[in-house]
Length: 280
Image (cartoon, rainbow, N blue to C red):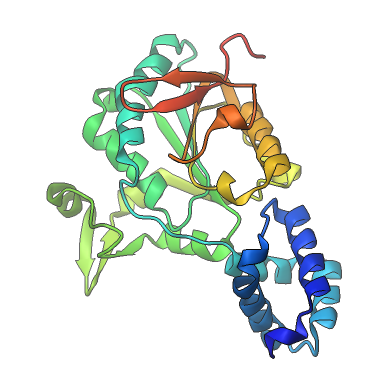
């Protein structure tokens, strides 16, 4: 199906629809990327034209095709110990701050979104085991979410390329991974330590159950949102955090430019954002 069969008007209609459903805004510069993936799904579903496919996409009750398309449209590029300074901040600054205030004895809860193929939540788990002295004194819950069901399957499987693990210290690689041909399989204990869930950040029904987190990692996701979606996401995370809880964004992202709900906290390792202690 030639790209010319998707008109400028068709592209704009799809862009608006996908934005409303996911919060992800495709710039006109992404036209080729979007068209190629639309063409793939149009062909696989046996649709005759973009318009017949788009009608099916909008009115399909199960939402199955929208999920297939979302899986294609989302970018999952990551590796272990990416932006490691934030994991250092977690164990050296955030967790000591949290446990000093923690009186309820409940587990420390960490939410990583998006999960991508699992490198980030597994990195958190490894970092806690290797570098946090309090690991033996506290129960930890790590939940990691993504809109892409296919990538969640990969995350649960926990098998990675040499590129994904290239920044891990050799002793850590040997301790938590098994070499399988030209890939690395993460150990079963770590796979069981992380709960992977499907969440659309733009859908309130999906995010409503996510509450009482001490730390949220949401790195390099909001750059795909526009200002309205970013502000809505900031409010969603605010509701998901306990008073005094922290959120870590990607190095090019700033909560100060998105929302005034959070306090800026400058730690030796990183700048993070905190839900005020007096928040209710």
